[in-house]
Image (cartoon, rainbow over all chains, first blue to last red; front, top):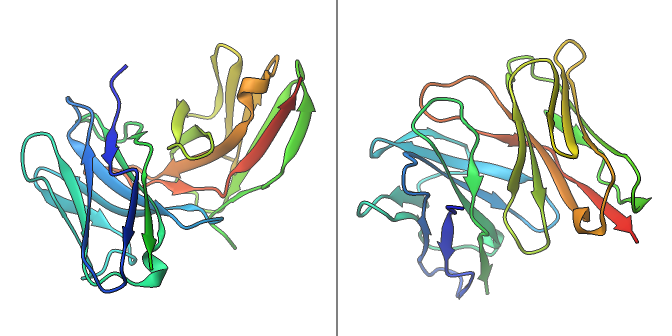
Length: 114
Length: 113
């Protein structure tokens, strides 16, 4: 069964550094998403992306964050000037190109900021 | 009031039991409802997806939505130890450009052999 893949599975970064998290969505999906889950807390929406632009973002997704689809298969989340509170699991998800369809998630990248 | 509430558990049941997991929500604009299963150190895995009030069945799983009460349930029949996981409800409002999911906090289920 097709799946969303995320790399790396674990990223350790010094505070203040930039980090890029990578995702390969399911091949026929055209809606892409990032969520995060701080340890012990709910899964929280960050951003949705369609047709090469952000379609919706939460208040968490400030100027520190950016997303990009650099080629036909990858979808990335960049976090600039990382802070301790950015430590979390980051999940990528994708869905088919029809509105309001269920999202399929990858296994996440655990980001640890030291 | 939190948008989506879910009892965190843990819920411990013997193998073969019927499990009932529930979420309540406050936003009447939610129209799409999902249940995900999350194993430790894994991503949410889609179990059920529904957009209308009533029941939807898939194998041992039944999703139930009551929009008038803002209440959704997931029933698991003949529960197995492999069902031990955290179950997340999620919901969204209709949107033409990708839909943001709002999650509950998850219920941890343990099925004992």
